[in-house]
Amino acid sequence: MTKTLVLVATAALAGLAFPAFARDRYAEPPPVQVSPHLSASRLLQLSRKPGQHVSRHSAGVTLVARPAKTAVVRAPEPGQARSEMNPIYLPQPVAYDGGEPAGTIIIDTRENFLYLVEGDGLARRYGVGTGKPGFEWAGTHTVTRKAEWPDWRPPSEMISRERARGRVLPAHVPGGPDNPLGARALYLGSTLYRIHGTNQPWTIGGAVSSGCIRMRNEDVVELYERVPVGARVVVR
Image 1 (cartoon, one colour):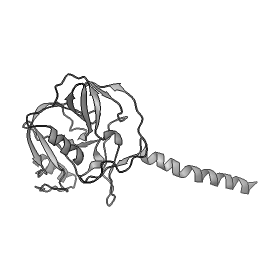
Image 2 (cartoon, helix red, strand yellow):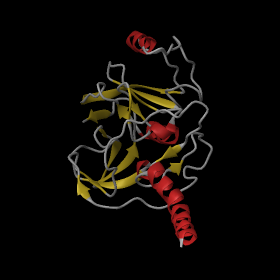
Image 3 (cartoon, helix red, strand yellow):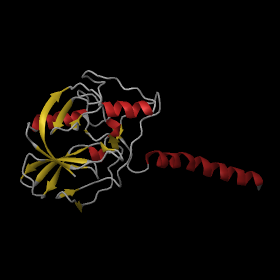
């Protein structure tokens, strides 16, 4: 009798251990691996589609899918590579009736989406990373400058803030694949904020930045080609 109970318990544990780990690891929809390299395929792995639903957004956009909540994304552990991103943040067309003219960029910092209004009731939607708690902002600006593979000079406030946390930032990082600003940058008004690429694509969809709007390199290159200097940008 005792031997039978031990065998039953062992079988039950063997059947539950790994599924439970998978549920804890991926929580909501399983991640999609997206290459940070411009020459690679956009979608390398998609296990299943996330749950679909339709809702009316405050910006006048009909969403066909959205995350349950905005997350603060943590960096990977030292030595651990990451390239996962929820597939709902991949570019896609959506219906739009918010009243902004074609060519306007609308950034929803609550849901972490950027919309490029296309006209005829449509917009192009991209996933973005936005300001982490304490760095949120809203306003209307224009694109005053565009740059390919921009260099990065961290502002003095950021250098001081990170030094207090034990992290020393360089005074200057030249443009290239290792630059935090990624492949392209669109500068907003006279502010220090930009819409830019990233060398950390797994952070898209989270509250992760010091106020800048972060996109995958593939997506910011596409936006860069479609948006001229002078375009209106609405951050909400």
